[in-house]
Length: 624
Image 1 (cartoon, rainbow, N blue to C red):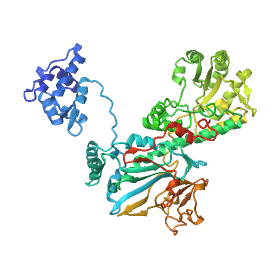
Image 2 (tube, rainbow, N blue to C red; image 1 turned 90 degrees about the horizontal axis):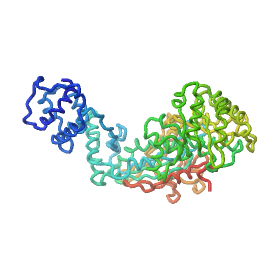
Image 3 (tube, rainbow, N blue to C red; image 1 turned 90 degrees about the vertical axis):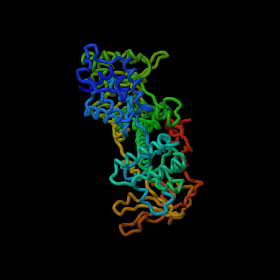
């Protein structure tokens, strides 16, 4: 009997399954044959099955061995039984809802990802609790950017830690179920016994109610500081949990992602602002940079979570996004009172090319008719972008475009090229549009041509931190104002970066053994850029910090130099900040704020606060 036939037969004789000790094995000839009208079970039969299923189990779960016995008795081949049940079983048990879904042929429900903080780490971390010196009580570590692989990127925007604290660390995050799951996983994953520190996690559950006994101090989110500045520190608050500090490194170092996206976005904001200024723009409120870089990155990132967090990082700097997950993220984790970003109706190639080559102009006309007011964007390079700009937008549909601003009605068409060399294509398109709409073209205060208010261009292909200045330079040289352009960026905004973009690292800098603290550091002779800081740290403004010249940090001098170098004052390259090491800082002047302690979130930054901190000079979020 094939599996599907068995499922239908089981529908007819399901009551036998409930009579565990009374079921007799049926001969194949006694099994009912399915007729042509009996190809699918009805909902009523399925509901009856679900009722019967529940008689076999406790709390919706049945032992695999018990279900195997029944299925073999009523005629299913042992091999088929094993194949089906093994695909569904977890720990020797099967959820009856899963088995019922297989019988009915209904799609199973989605499989949610259940967080287990114990398993949100690198494998080798499980072995580290045995490796610290005997008598260890406290491990103190810090996170920083050790520089950047992009020329001129000397600052970083600190953003994203709050998401991880709220999402993964706050409240009770250790439970008996999670400990047991970790025990099973580690026993299957590792060769040998004794790697998983069950007693340590059991202690956190029993002593601390499953709340993590750690303290985290961090810069306020949105703070812009030079690289090589400490961004957050972490230490355990219970001496029996000394191993916990660096166990959490794997998860918390992922802050590299939102802070790198946020910084990437901000540097592009700076480039856009400068180009606007150079070509005569003067409105620096919402009419400035706020909508000049639109997030197209949802489809180009590695996961929905990446889209949410990376998209939220972009919204620290701009107001334009098509990444809906980012709107949810900013509401749930950063107190956005409403949608933190905005979008407009826009076409894609399928909605234009489906009209055919000869009716491309009709597809474009349809866009203007369907969205007669407000902004609308239309991809225009499906066949010939220059023809589309000259003959369609600039001729056949010209009056409709001009009519979008009339009386109390205001609207704008945004023309989108999506191929070719961005600099060359944008220049050619602006030349065509300025010629076709020359009666309404104006000059800025710097003498650069500006399209009428009802018309703009968005470049959404090949846009990144390097191409934006290049495009603007080409436009400026050709006599066009930067205000003509809007940009959309996808993978280059949210994905084309990694932890090494800002050389992010989490390092232990102090350890306490039997009540005595001592400094910890690394200083590899093969890479002086990986030298770490020592002791307890504070981050202070340089002009508020008194220090002698001999206290200024000097790195190791050559292979024979003193490991760890000399001095404890780590000044930033711009001289504005100093990370004071070796516990010699002034806590009253420390910019690091305690944001988390023993499972509780102590600071809860809002998106509005973060935007103001991260804004560029004369930017949209810092306007009065």
